[in-house]
Image (cartoon, rainbow, N blue to C red; front, side, top):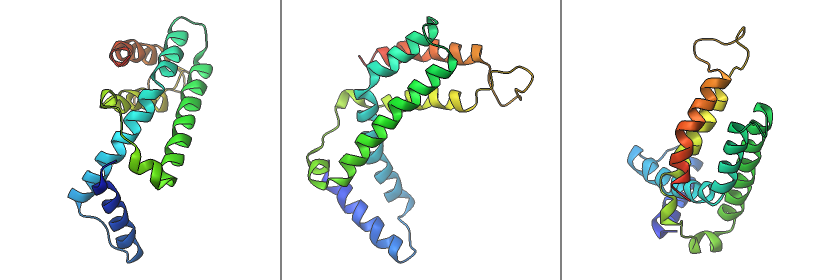
Length: 149
């Protein structure tokens, strides 16, 4: 990881102790580095995400199983990211794969659909989506995600 990332992290921690915050520009820069880490770890699990999506679309798993698998994969990713971030030596040596750029946002779009899902027609509000809409979203994003393979 770039040295500037560590300097920004240290500076942010120092500011927070005094109740101050990074400038918007510096915060965006820090978020960019963190996004690179998320892209990389989600990209490493792309085949697991793809498998869950295909299994759901082909009715090998039901809606609840699809959601559970997506969250389980993401839980594994969060654990891996946490381990990396707590080991500064590994973090310093870490270089995200350039092929992973932009991957995390695709997966995040699918998580957004899951969060606004209401499968019950009687309970669904205008801000929520049906299982059919969720499936349509998966069909839309699956080819984009497969491009990363």
